[in-house]
Image 1 (cartoon, protein in one colour):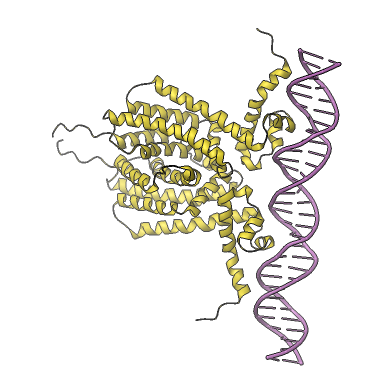
Image 2 (tube, each protein chain N blue to C red):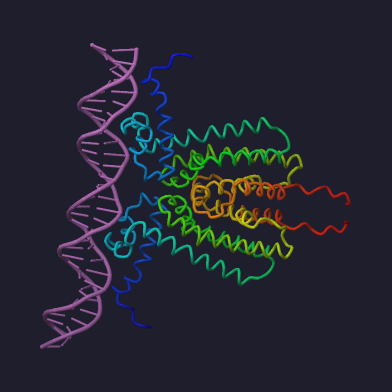
Length: 214
Length: 214
DNA sequence: TCCTACTGACTGACCAGTCAGCTATTAATC
DNA sequence: GATTAATAGCTGACTGGTCAGTCAGTAGGA
């Protein structure tokens, strides 16, 4: 085994992500405004000053957090799309499964909610999120829909609106989980909701079957 | 014309709602955490102390705001449902139009977003909102869906999940408006999105037409 | 003259961000 | 290999500013 790197130096490499992890936990529990830099520091096992060595402000921590956690998931969604060519309806289900899986991770789900809540206070972040996350997600989806329409698998429909209608239940389910899930007496399993969504949506956009009687 | 009521006394009656109006504007612009009591007071044309005469804390202002603005709309939705009996699909469109109209008022749209954002800090409010707003809205919707299924107008489907799928695009569209609308280069008109939603959704849940060839 | 609505200066707590200094580690020197 | 020097990483007390909430006092109205 290679000798471990010097402890101090190794810590330096690890600190940023340790701080972000701690920050995510804090933001999830109390929101952005109510978490203090000291909370984040203590949770990361570090002093307040150290956090400022790596991030110049609380805003910067938040922005780094969003960037670090969101983009890898988008990349992997795009990759899985490329890895699974096939009928557009199958790819649609693939994307749905993907979102469902991401959405089942409470730590990740917290992020869109935070962005939504803080969009007013972080216009830059809202722009970034709209462009890099929502924009790219919708574009992927529109690509799949366009392929399906071109192949006669789906009816011709306005791409943008259709893509948003497909995504809406996925996103809202995620927000729901983080907001109301705790107080549900008989929670509706997300998998059930999403399965029904897939069924209804595919039926709604399917091209009509060829009618042999005509 | 009857003589106007004494100015001081009249003001007392009007203050609470004036304060709530001002608070809504402030919360919309800067979020809950970032608005100061003094902002609300100035906007209401009053001093900070006066706000505290009517509401014991900032939290109380927020809670009163939500309660005052949400419930009347639900009542009126229920009333309009009673006033328009008819096929379930028509009632579904009625509810969609209703939500669309409420949603087109930016002041009202801000509230669900605030509740979402602050749910963690106001557990009581989240419970209230879940029960009184979301719960009653979903119940109304489930009622319409159940009628339609019983009448053979819609396929039999799980009520709860179907109702949520119907609502999701409406709510998400509202959140979208408040979060990203400002930066859209070619905004998608909500009416267009909602019309497509109605079309797709009704097609998805429609009972299959009787097949005369069978 | 009394009361009711209102005012706004004030207090106490809180916290983001700073910085002088400490400590563990590595490098240099003998 | 022991001692000292240099430095990178980290610390936490401190500062300056902000703001929720208070309350003694003012003024309009009956």
